[in-house]
Image (cartoon, rainbow, N blue to C red):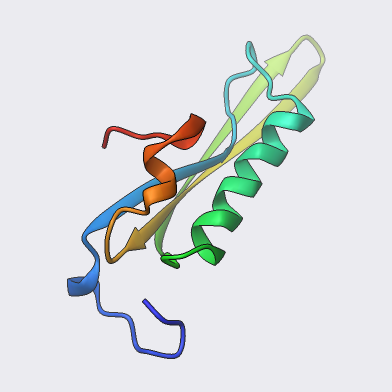
Length: 97
């Protein structure tokens, strides 16, 4: 889908869910993992075929650890494509969905 053309939901045949962040205090994400998540989202939006964000889910976790309160956030972007990108079918970005 070209960014200059209007995107219709009927053109979308594949949706990739791209999570950014985590709400699990027992398994915090490293900076490297966060960067990999952001790089995957950027690749979905910039590589061919270009995807478009059609929705997002936001999860917020608030935890009490002793006297401290910990707030964590996870955003899952729904990126729609006219077809499944070939680069998703190889490497660690592979997804069976």
